[in-house]
Image 1 (spheres, rainbow, N blue to C red):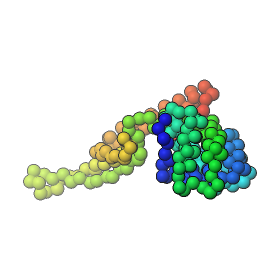
Image 2: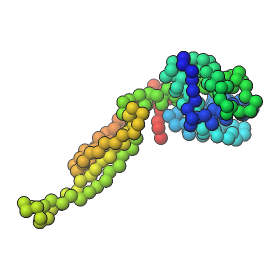
Image 3: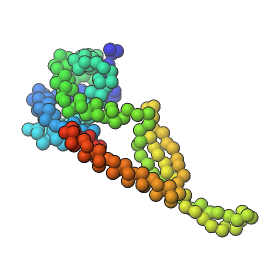
Image 4: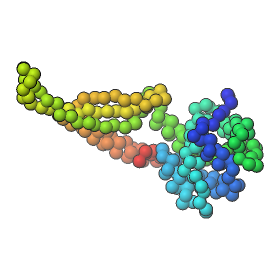
Length: 219
């Protein structure tokens, strides 16, 4: 596997894990081991907090980083031990590594934390959810009044309402936008499509529950 690097926005959290006391690492590991997987790391944090003996600083960032690292590891198709070793070696080479940093200790911590089942399953679920060419990000509708002029193009004879739907989506590593013109009939059709999708979701949720498997919801 190529040498692993730590993205800048995760580096502070990785260094935080390396600097944690053994007791904090143990209680975080034990608390996370009793959580259920989720598409939202905040839900895992809430579960874990209820099982901690003492408050752990930056728990939200720690959980989000561990899930993201698991996602990277799974996509790279490398073993947990190999991945942890490469991350530990990267931190060894860093001039910003914590005081009293020990590579073997940090490597052992990563194996222990990244191996938590709920974090691994959550990473798999997130990857499946995002395994599409285009990912919806947000939507907004801006409504305009458009005048209609007569043959002379001077006299106003009427007006109409036009809705501009902006869809923001993620593709090839960047956010993009598309615009669609809608009238009231289009809005009604779109509403019916969304209503049908919600009905399908309810039916499929029942089917999933009958199969006694976990339902992953983004709520």
